[in-house]
Structure formats: C-alpha cells, structure tokens
Image 1 (tube, rainbow over the protein chains, first blue to last red):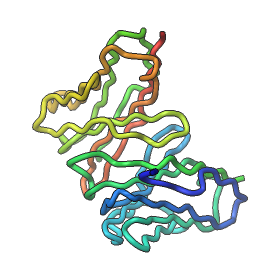
Image 2 (tube, each protein chain N blue to C red):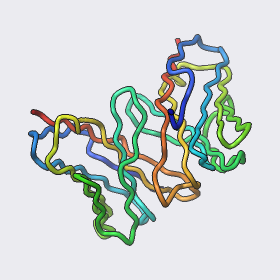
Image 3 (spheres, rainbow over the protein chains, first blue to last red):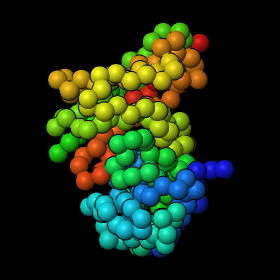
Image 4 (tube, rainbow over the protein chains, first blue to last red):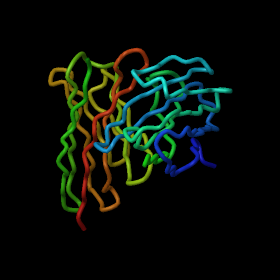
Length: 115
Length: 111
C-alpha cells in the first residue's frame, strides 16, 4: 500500500564504500526527486527526474549518480562514501515537476551513517 | 536566491489553543507555498498548498495565509491537540521546478 517506498531504511557503511538506495512509487506520478536532510533538518534537493529524464541536478558531488529505469523508480548510487554523506535521504514524487496542483509525496527516508 | 526562513525555536502551546507558525521568504514572490508535517523518523507529509493569488486556504482545523507584501505565510492549527505535535515545514518553488524548504518549526502541544 505504501505510495513511495525506499530501501533500505537504515544503512551503516564504512568510508570509501559504494552503496545504493532504491525508491519506487505506485502513484502513477511522472516526477521523482531525491532530497537530503542534514543534521540541521534542512531538506535540500539533489536530483529530479521527469518521465525518466533528468531535469534537476543540483550542485552535488559526482560521486552521487541517480538512475531512473522507468518513471516509477529512481535509485541513488553513491561512490566512495565520505563522513559528510551521513544524512537522511528522502525520495519523493509528484504528478508534475515543481507541482503547482498539489504537494510532494515523500518516502519514509533512508538514514545513511558513514563510519 | 530564494530562501525560506522559519522560526527555529520550538513553539509550546496548551491544548485547545491556536498554534501559529511563520514562514518568510526572502526574494521574489513565489507562485505557491506548501506546508508539510514531519514526525520523527518519518518523511514529510503534505498538508496544504496556497497559490500567490489566494489570500487564505483552509482544511479542517488548518488554515494557511499568504501575504505577498510581508513576504510571509502563516500556518494556523485551531483547537490544537497533543497529536498535532510535530515539525512543520514550509516549502516554495525556487524556479526551474525546484522546491526548497525551511528547516521547520517544532510544535509541542501540551495536554
């Protein structure tokens, strides 16, 4: 029943490792996003895909690479993890980019801890 | 560039009172403002969206206003309940389909 689901919910890994976070939405939305929430609780946009096409690519290290195999999935791969990557990563979706008709639907988040 | 400012101090109110949270934006008047609720360990949940040509929007006990002169949106919860305790985030567009968020205001409703 979950509208936007992310896996895993928790991820603890060592510096230098490569890891992936998966996201799937069953709402039929055309646009998906990755947001990062740091320790100060700011939600910062990282990427957005609309119908599998990248439309937003914020100033994010190129160690972060999103992939959208279809419009219902948006995965995030992170290479060479660093301590500063520790945060909660949220996937979200909306019917249209920027959504003027309604809000975003967020997943429950993936808490990434790099040790 | 557009920034969102929300009161970082927690708001403590008594059950039954009206909670009022503030969201200020710094630059141009956005096309819309959104309000979300976030509980610990959970993702934000969309509550209301108000457009720049709307002065006020209501949903059950929630009311949002948009004042382009003050560059401000106010979020009201009437007849507040302990279950309303959460962090409330304000978000707006920053151009190019990007929605940016404030850090949120933590609300505590005491029984």
